[in-house]
Image (cartoon, rainbow over all chains, first blue to last red):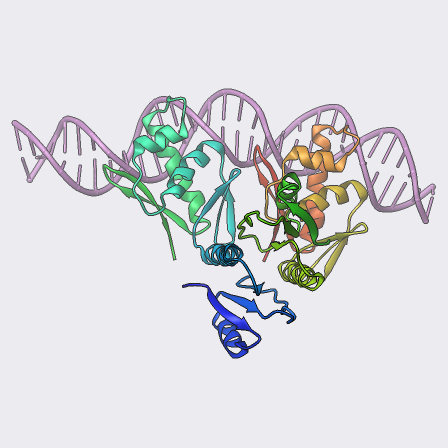
Length: 161
Length: 161
DNA sequence: GGGAGCGGTTCACACTGAGGAAACAGTCAC
DNA sequence: GTGACTGTTTCCTCAGTGTGAACCGCTCCC
C-alpha cells in the first residue's frame, strides 16, 4: 500500500474516493488555493511549487503514520508491554526477557540468549528462566500475546487472534 | 491547550520536551534544512518562508487532529475532572497530581514527577503520595478512569471500558 | 517393552521491599 | 462548629524474585 499523490482542487473526486477507501494521500495544492483542513492522519498536503526534498519528506511522514496506524506489533517500554490497545505491567527481569522476544516476534530465540538477556551478570539457575517464562506467558496472555515452546531450540512470541 | 510553534533545528530541546509532554507542535523549518520525519499525529512542519495562509492551515490541521485525538480524553480544569459526560471534584493537591497523569494518559509517570507536581515546594513524605494516589483512585473510578501501578516505575492513567 | 534421562512445566515456599490503607490530628473555609 | 482537605503514623498486603521439588511427555538404549 502506497501514498497516493493527487492535485487539488482538480482531483477532488479522487480525493473523496481515497478518503473513503482509507488510503494515504498527499494533496499537491495549486498556488493561490486554500489548503483543505483535515484531521485525518492519512492525509497531508504540500503547496506547489515545492522542492523534491520536501515532497519526499511529506511522503515519508505519511508512510510512517501509515505504518504506525496499521502496525500490529507489541511494544516494550518502561516496564509495560503494550499490544492492540491493551497493556500489562512487567517487572524488570521479565521485561528484559520479553524485550528480546518482542524484537524478534515470530522467530525462535534460544534459552541461552533469553537467559543472558534476563541476567546480564550471568548467574541464572536453569529453572529461574523456566519460571519466568511461565509467568511471562500468563502476563502476555492478558493482552493477546502467547509464547510458544520449540523443544530443544527455545521460545517464540506469537500474536494470537 | 494550543499548538506550539518552534524553530527547527535551533529549538531542538524544546521539541524533545513537547514530544514527551504530548503537546501539539508545528516546526518552522529553516531554509535548506531537512525536515524531520515523524509519525506523530500531533507534529507537523512548514518550511520558511511561508505564507500566513499556509501557516494557518497547518495550525488548523493540527488543532483538528488534537481535537479528534482528545475527544475521548479526560479533561482537568478548575478543580474538577471531566470524562465522558461525568465529572468529579478534586482538591488542589490531587488536582496537580492528576493533571500530570491526564497530560500523559496511557504513559507511565514516575512517583518522583508526581511528587514534584503535587508539592512544588518539595516537601512530600513518601507516604503522602501513596495516600493521595489511593484517594485519587477512588475519585477517578467514579467517572470511568483507573490508575494502574507499574511497580518500581510509577503510575499510569487508563480509560476503562 | 520398560526404565533412565532429558527438557520443559508448574506449584509451593521464602525472603524482601514497594505500595496500599486505616486511623488520627491539624488546618482552613464556610 | 462542621466538614472538607491535608499530612503523618503505623501496620499490612502483595508483587518480584529465586529455589526446590513434583510431574509430564518424549527419546534413547538396554
